[in-house]
Length: 625
View (spheres, helix red, strand yellow):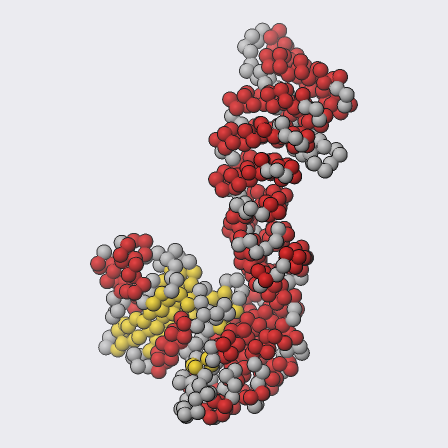
């Protein structure tokens, strides 16, 4: 154990072993001298005693929320020849700033450490920063391959986020980023744009007239093509007289140019080429790049007033992000329109951002209205079966515990859209216990929907749940005040009969069909009982047919309802045919009495898959198998 711990926390000569993460393949681009690599967390904590587990973050470096489950991360590394290297000093500033400055549109810090390694007599110091998993914006844009309106909407949304991050730094924190550009922006797995590259970031000290030196200690890291005139001249007096956003507003202009032109800015003069800039963005782009620092557009004004940001994607995501501030009418209207609106938005953004995590989390935490469930399922239909199981099913399972009756009804109404994706264990242990409360609900509509859902759920229930719980509820529903529910209960029993074990069938079916359904005052319920008997005919012994089924069925040939009479004659014919077959077997010398007999091939009687409705005049609907 001590040897293992030494390998984890040792400083000299261990290199990347100091990092509780695996470093994978690097991306082709990164800001400055940093290398941006893919990574995963190491599952090392689980093998340690508790006291070492608690001490490990202190021993191996600074960590805020480092996972240890093999989850994806990004690893940024910066190397220098000695501890006093200027790039390393700037890198340490970047680590400190990234860890302490928190904002939804700024890259999320997880962990950092330094490692020293030796190559012969020369030493190399490497700084590691671990963050949420991200990809360079340049590479993500190429991967998405968006064009036309969808590209512009996605760019508008991303720029809107970066402008908010810059505004937070400049206006709220009085900080200057110093090098906003395409390489300082990365994209998360949910396609959010995040600002990073804080090596140059410094406090704005424009109010301190006594200071005369550089305001940006590491401004030499900034490429000359990204420097506004006052910074290129190192005119710190002019910079301190300028507003806090002057330098970063210029940087936003550089970002916009690189984004729409598709090329890296190589010299400042190229910013005058506006052919690729959208017309609705052009006026603000020019104001961001004003030659007079005091006249440059504040990023907060860009966020609030820019016409380019007024599109469906930005509006949709913004609405969902402030959902808690909306009233019920606004939510209801929005979610009813969302499925159609989503058809017009970039599908990848809808699935990775609008659908998850925004829509799913809004439902999970109760801020979304019931119509959001319909939207979730419609958008979820765009996913593959595996993705649906991973990204949508967990939310659905959690929603079954909701006390919102509208959500519960929505889940039951659409169960055919996701029922197949639910595992038997999930249904038996997590879904059914919540669904079953609907059997005794005061709302007849909810009781009926609960009953109908069993056609999807029952095949995945265990025998213990079927016999010990479901059948008890169905027994009570056969005497429900609502005649349609009594009818539906009989139909359901006919459908799930094959799922029951032999002992349970003998105990339940005859009593439910011949004992209750055929004596019901509601004629469609009597009809359902007759069809259920036919559909389950193979489960009855000859003595049961002769003494318990035929006597009560024959009476219904005189039923006041013509449909019931018709079904009664069909039932009598079927069971008499079964008895004739048994008679013929006895006459041929086969004296062995079968435990059960049955004909399952008679058209119209092989199975029951129709359901009644509380609002329907044609209550029973039977369909051929």
